[in-house]
Length: 202
Image (cartoon, rainbow, N blue to C red; front, side, top):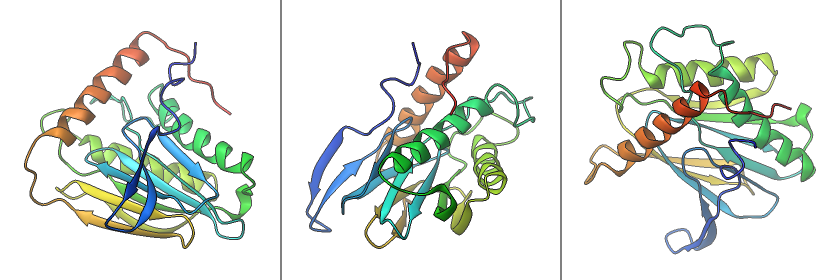
């Protein structure tokens, strides 16, 4: 069984009154792609998101992922990097099924904040940020905007119709939901990696 079977298309649909539009919220391990004008929303701590768009076809999507790397894993071709590759490829392939063309894709990348204190010498955010940049460069997908690293979580609002992504830095947090959610997700994927779970690459 694919360990990501239940971690793909975001199920959390709602109507956002602030922006007066239909919206989808994605959580760690999820992604969403659409050809409709549905706003995509997520909140990032150490995780990263790639907001990818085919500007000609008007198809866009976003993922939200974290590498399960250990402190001594500096090789991004390691087992942990397979999870990052999967997170990128499953989004891109879904967009292509909707009609996007890979050679027209452009990306905006966000996240990698230093919010999971004490996990690694090299921060989790740094590893995730380095991975997503290396992946996009290797795949020749043009990066048109970047907002990575720092100390604060981010809330993203992606507008597929225009390609705009609004970013709000969360400098004051009233609870630990973001950190708790990412910590639980990190433990889950580390356990899966240790057990040698299947990750279908494309």
